[in-house]
Length: 592
Image (cartoon, rainbow, N blue to C red):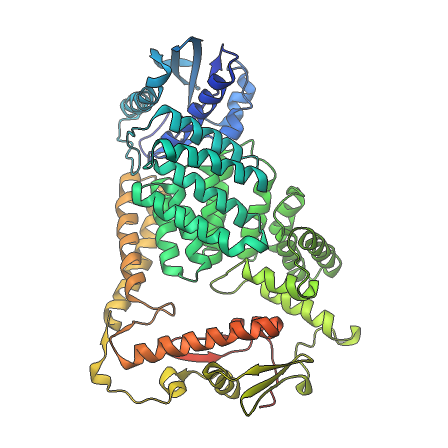
């Protein structure tokens, strides 16, 4: 028997359609998918993925229905004649196969979308009466859109799911066609965002910046039209991760989960971004929830799980899931598996997976502009923008060491003194790192880097680098330390309260707690710098901080063009902000 605090699970089975007409088949395939999406937006409802429900061809097959694990089934039949449609929809309780709700709809094709809204509202109302509590929704609302725009959107989404570069481009044609019919159709902008997201996620290196910006811009446009679009919010959160704006990233990711925590594909996308932010335990929880909602999931789910378990340091589970994963997972997945085997000290398997990564990298990404070793190591960190520690770092250090030293000194991570120098000679700098010498034109940023290299592990104030004085009385903090500490204390309290509420199924309380949590994060993202320190408004310190950060990062970009290996080392080792420091990822003896 269902209790008040237990989420109920429903499954929308494929509609049984008598018509052989392609348009009707396509329309009702999208219609079923949309019903799943709408139901998933209601707090208190868990919805089985269409990937699993599509396998159910006969509702009388009790074994397959039981495998879904659903409390209720939504089942429908469709008869089509000319422009008229007769649709029968039933809500069935799986426990005893009893009919809970049934209705017949005689509609035209043009009125189909309004009927879809009616079906959702009627079934939710019936379920509320059955379980005796409100199914709150943050994001469900009736929408008005022309059928032709909707059909183009459906075809575009179906094309996207085929998952290739050519299909991503073709899908954009349908989304743009939908926008020509309805310029304010938010879901079409979401589709465009996802098409660029696919390019970006498929790791097409030559179009990386273009694809990431496209995903970001179209997600912003979708949210302007519908602030509750959970898919666009999730994409936007991930783009902010790559931009290094971690507070903003978390804000949008949390909001997207609040809008919809029952879409398994969305859960996996968000989990990946949360992994980058360091929330590995939460990523594991979302992974398991996605599996529950999609019991007949594809093997690529195991690749996600393998990555998340690596993040929490459970290396045995990580490699066990990797063995079950599809061999057609993303390009850098074998590198994550290699990182797990390195921690287990199974060097043979580590090299086996590393070689697999190199083969995939050479086929899908390698540009030929640098050596494949240099480019593959640099690329691995660029496409995985971890905020804090990642087990990829010791893997990269180990690979570098193996390539650079003899077999008798494999673990020595100290580079040779004579190979590392940072000298100024007139208007140029001569930089030697790991045996490669380059000459670079003088910039202010090189002076900053030189001073940081001269003081490893030491924090230097941005004013020391600027050689400026300041009148501290002119500084005004956007948020004082006492307030910041209070916010941080409340954030920890809310995390505990949310976890407790979720464990007891207190759905109404979860919504209120998450709203407060998101509000604090949004406020802090506007008030704090990336380092978590309060920004100084209108002060000399703030100007110095911005100037030093810009010129150091700009100089590292210039170094990257001539010496990518050194640029990667400096990017990973130099921290900028009000206090700057050089804390090398591996020990380097510099001649200065």
